[in-house]
Image (cartoon, rainbow, N blue to C red; front, side, top):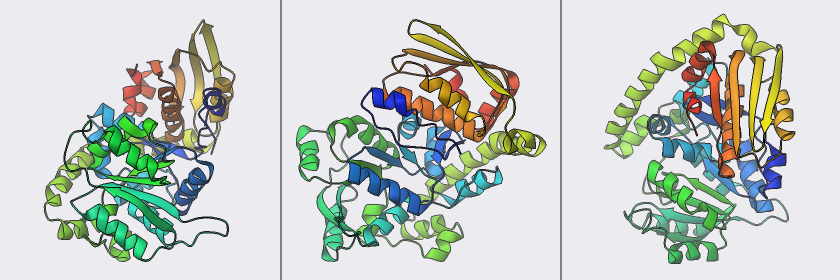
Length: 384
């Protein structure tokens, strides 16, 4: 895999970016195809270096909600690390040929961090719980601190069910910052939690922030997590219904959206993978030409663009100045693309959005348009 981290652009603006060599596009979102251990390593590295890490763990519910919710989808694109949480997504990714190592549930990451003894010279991770049902954050804090191993809780808050603004007062944010937490765990419901993080993360000093909805309840033992066998079999959703019967409505709705995406996007993408193996198996002829005028650049991509030819795009981007107000891609002469290339485009969009800028695909031939649709990133064709 290629490291398309645009590090030169990020350093120029004081933003030390994370290396993302494993990012692929799937159902409209960028996924870092990491293992649980690799995700934990990224979290520990971010804490050690005090580098910002916005971790997002999309499952089927996330994917379903992002289809028609651009702000929610942007919160995933803006994340520094996006892992595959949900066995249906693991299965779909592998079926399409993506090298998905395993399911990375937020609860699994949290449990491993909590139960791993720190290395010599390391301190336990300081966690702060924000959200959850009444008393859940307090109970979770008490249980963690009763037997601390790899983690201690340095604060908690249960803000109730107010608006984003009422849960973002200076007093609330000052309390989180004063705790000197390493890891802020938010539990407000997926869409609201992501929106709260987006609204406040620049005002928070916590290096690692993530919405991990069920973690507070599991840590407080208000809910029991599914046994390992149920998790491996992809039946944790059924166990969750046993624990929270009202969830069945959400799962039915999510299943309907996923079925529609299967028929309209995943199946055509799979057919393309089977009938165009050369697109995914080897490097092909690829070139890029740049038209530059003042603060605007149009990159004309030509040929076959996949994980093997991404270094050419990376080299081209790092040769451009970081103050480009307008960056556009012309894909009209591209033969075909793969999930790694499209994932690379989403990471470019991530970097551009971090600078308050955008990315546009101003032209694409019908074949590439179809591929962008199948992988769910056709919104790039109209993104400002």
